[in-house]
Length: 428
Image (tube, rainbow, N blue to C red):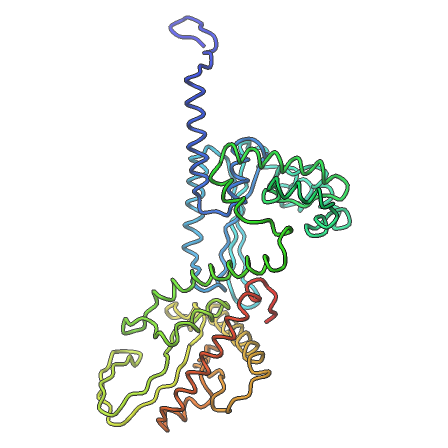
């Protein structure tokens, strides 16, 4: 280094400089620990930042089939991750993919390829485009033997449960005591799993030392392969309840055209229909009003107030329709109109499949049974009782109670089957 014509050579690294670097590293890792990402993504990101992995990836997905998930949310997550990665001093490349599926739903994927070396990121992009899974594995920092075995197929690999069952009781006990398996994110090869385990052991040690908060988060749950059937079911139940909690929070914020929240008597089925990925657009728990009562209703254009001249019975119902129908003048766009029909037919098929299972061994009066009533030409529909129209004509309070009970029983059926649906065991 030269200064005013003098050569001072390299400035020696002082303890003070080392301390500054250490503090900056600590602050960066703390920020990474607090990102809105899954624990595995955060672990891989920290290991990449520390040079333990050449590259890592983070994916942000948008699936319009899932109610309450908005494209704006995915784009905001993408923008936030871009900013944070830049702040962390990490290089990245984003691979963007989008498609419309056979049912008319839009899918977007933002795949972040992350590293400290732009050349490594470029190599990873090439490996992904070439579908070279061995090279991808090596660039993600996996053991070469595991990456090669993965590229050759299942004959060379252990699936998690099979590997665990090959271990002796002592090996199971030792590995369990180490708490190492929560840090494993690749499949072991059958020939070299003991050496490959050392990679995981090193990652565990680095995270324990450098990211203690994340370490605690990762280790709080028992690894899946070590769980009993009862423990797995308990874990799934907890995960299902967490998903339902998120959906309930969104349902609680919904309101009708009058600004009123969803009726308490219909709120639970609205929650579960959305949990089964069917988008609801309106609902009513059902009401019986006596002669002389004042009621308010929205007729599609304005709010009207009326004093009833005779008793009125309104059956319970839930409307289900494509979110694309919120687009103004969607009927004038042939491509959007076609997608609306496809999406609503998807919802119809799903609802019919569920009702078929529900009524397979259930025997109730025909008018009480639930069915789908079409709304217009779009394929949108209303879930209601078969006798809904007759009930409005007859104005029978006791029949309304039976119809409401049928909705509650269907809700119980959905609750019972939600866990299997969430974990892809219920085929509908």
